[in-house]
Length: 268
Image 1 (cartoon, rainbow, N blue to C red):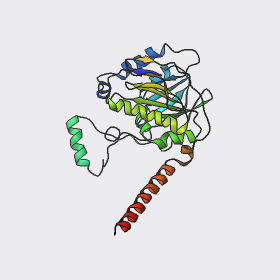
Image 2: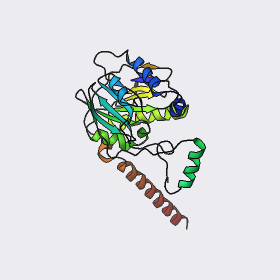
Image 3: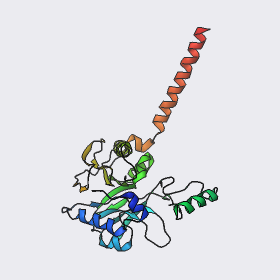
Image 4: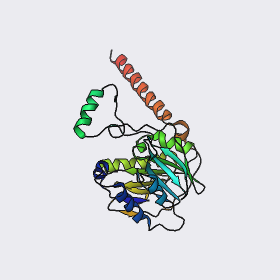
């Protein structure tokens, strides 16, 4: 796993070329040790040519490079072909998709005129897929997906043995970065799976199935050489999701209402 320090805003404006970014990923991956799986962060690969040059045996954040396709995904690559891929489940509002794009088209058209380029939404994944590589099943999800517990839960229920979060945390700083990292720890606890985070900026980490950070890298660029466990089985949260918590919360509210009514009667 890597922690890169690519300027996200230069990347978005194309002041920093995709080729320059790719060169940084390749340089850090030279420290790969035998038997390790390479994991790159969100949108690290932006063309088919780049994919062909990527180290075999890796999980890569990639921007869809097929003609007329828009997707933010993670794929597994064996050096010859893409073995499996999965797309981002929840594109970021106002960053990857634009609410009411058709309903308030004049407003969006005005914004496009001001910024000088068109705003085209990235579609959400129609279905989540577990990635396979070297006989291991990876539950990979992209950046903002870690905010939504159902994403990691669904991947774990589909057989993922370890969770992978390919992220770009370069859009924000301070507590936002830490909150995103903490959400990854909660996903590990909910599903009793190890979580591997490869990031641009942010916190690269290996998190065990109890939510404990085993190794982290939150400053500068670098590589984490990780050892982790492949786990199976189903937790209570995987079976029932938020239902038990919602039922308990409802019972607490009901209990409070009953107590209040009882006190009113006693005071009359």
